[in-house]
Image (cartoon, rainbow, N blue to C red; front, side):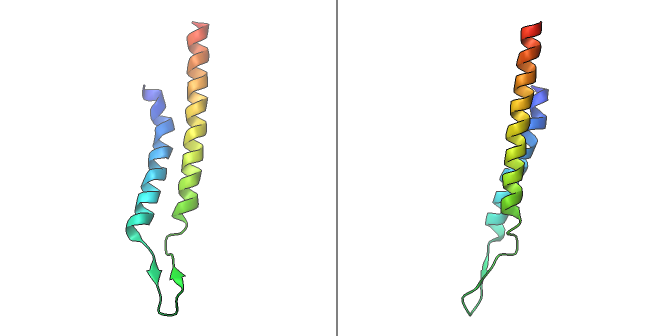
Length: 70
């Protein structure tokens, strides 16, 4: 199961980015504009999720091939 740590770490980082974005929040100015100081965390979390899913699939396929070969 240690091999899946490499795959779950980016997914956990993606969740952490979204939680951080939610906790910090946005600011509404008097003229009605929204100031999102940490908007970059949303696409960054998507990249972490995508890389975690791809690495999870890669590790799962490789481990299945080694189990079949043995």
